[in-house]
Image 1 (cartoon, rainbow, N blue to C red):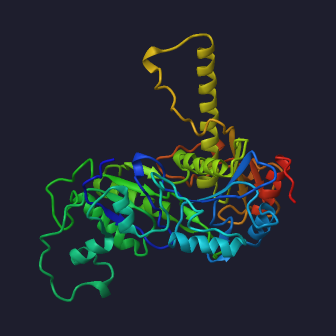
Image 2: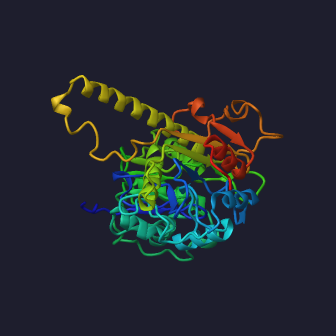
Length: 424
């Protein structure tokens, strides 16, 4: 694949650092860690997709129910009994550090060798530095917000302590920026908002003044649409989705036009779940299990990203299953379209065995109902305020979890019961 010869400005910091490899060409940006189970007595026909923040941890603290859950998921040798993939929109450290954190928190061995990411070689390589990510996406001459600020110090004027004491000479050799990648919410929002708008309004030449606002603007790609996320605080914290809301509205207020994205990546995008399923399949193949994985259970705390995404993928799976059934009927009666022959389906359809992706909402993170978990999950999971991204449709049915439980331990117990799977 040819590398894209263009320059990109990378924005992101703080909690989220969503990583991409070959970004919009293949798969999603959501960070994914896969764990390879070893020998199991009974091959499972189901697997788990676990969110991390608000499900397994709150900030730096592990949720006790997560430790209980993984005691049930491990056999007597400390190996996973069923395939598991961690799917998160967040990343705050290097991959091997994150793996060690999960190992310590959950009581199992997660190594860099057993961890996978989403994309191309490792489609979305997680927990890695911004410039390296940009380069791996295919961009060259990657610059960051700090590079722009350093080259054009007069653009960032909110914090008076950072204003230059003397007027700097004009910058003449700064490269034209040809794309913007937004990885995660920055530490200094006012700086990033100002400089990104400057880049868009100047057609990639910050500091320049154009006679007219260029439109369409240079390409913008965004990862992680989470409006909120859960850490140690009692109330949810602003996520990268909140930063995107600010950027979109400032751009529209200034220009009168909509900010456009080349791609929105991460949960709840379907490709995130496609690749997570692909990692599940890889685990099955490495283990040599005779039975394919037919059902996935996605456990999360955020109705918009986790539940919406899992339900969206479940709807996609059902539509794909119906399409395959219809195609099979046509083939069985000898009806064929010569023009579509050998092109209607991929040569190797690695998601063909999957029947469903059920969503399980836990109450230890962003979603936290008052009192006991209701008998009817629809009473508490239908949101009246849409927390999703502007470019996603507000479909209340996609916000309704298949199951609502108190915590991840109850989620595992529920799945074991549904699957008639021994907890021993």
